[in-house]
Image 1 (cartoon, rainbow, N blue to C red):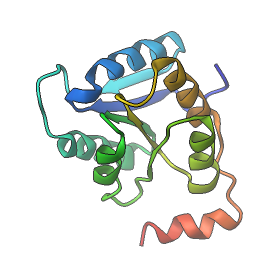
Image 2: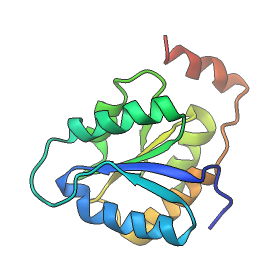
Image 3: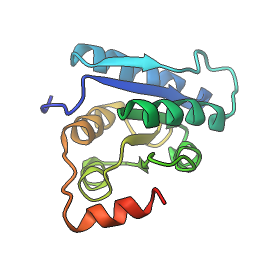
Length: 147
């Protein structure tokens, strides 16, 4: 694992992302990164906006990273991006994870459990949590998101 920029991550999912969330928690634990699990806690159908909201509120308050997982990653990203200071990015590979951090200072990684194999998820997470925001010309753009 690359050097992480965080010691803890807030994590949540809907029913479609539940099994992957459980695997991600084990992976983070083995990587010595604490996780705060906001649910869901089973594969019983739930509404993804409820879990994205819980996570977004905490990420905003704690200025920490979050991971949201649903079937595609898209629904949770749309829901989370409704909150100021939350920059949720759907990432399907290491390149998108790197650019989300470098150029957009993303603080929430959104994953599609139905679209990505778990071995790739581990690489995406490692890239996301170890990549620094470049700042520079990107800073003004990111600040505009919080207006």
